[in-house]
Length: 317
Image 1 (cartoon, rainbow, N blue to C red):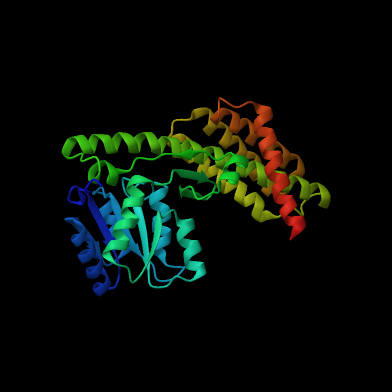
Image 2 (cartoon, rainbow, N blue to C red):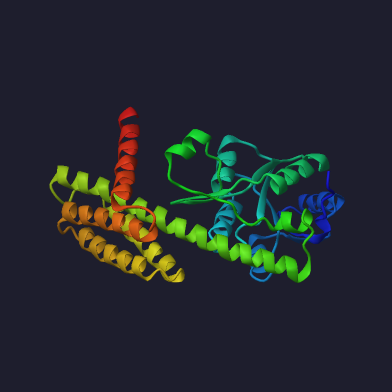
């Protein structure tokens, strides 16, 4: 088995407890890591990530509501740091169900329960170097694809194979400018793929919510539609517009701005059912713009199928 050159990689450790932080550093050092930075606060970690490129992040979480999970999600969405695809290991003393679910939802690659041995951590790292899961993007998640095979066949979210800088350095042995160039090129390509998929999922989400609002407004004959749903359409369209601008997707940005205008009109109680139906149609047009390889009827069918799956779950509940 090829020896792993962890001395070529950089790692950041966050743990508010000094004893745990030092213990983690010692385990990583025994595995061969030498470039190890440790932080007692998430604020210090975020500041460091603005100027440093880490290949591995080891972040401690005490409860399901630990702000470390929010930080992980923001890293995956490129809101913190320069490498949204760094391997993230969440560590904890508390393996309760809610925390495990939160770790999976945060975009972490793995959850490591304390106490753990040097050997077990090495096996986890080997797994993520040699067989890391591809990433999937949904309306509220960016991270490893944990869907079962049958679920992948029935859902349109694509799997994206992202750059693994830990593998490039520790296994493939890239160093210096060569490693920097490979990692930066991979990040740029994958960030574009992730952002385009985020745009597509946001467009679908807008259409789904609008479909429910249209049905509810028609049934209630007007202003009974839930304000929260309309507010969600508005906020999602605003986020979509900002992301489209960053990706220089001008046509998508223009359509998002149109949706924003229609949503604001509906929020005022004007022709809610009619405007919600218009938003649903605009969301399909937006998906076609963002997916030039797909036809309008295909995008419409996906929206209808998603609505029906959600309604079916509601009927079973």
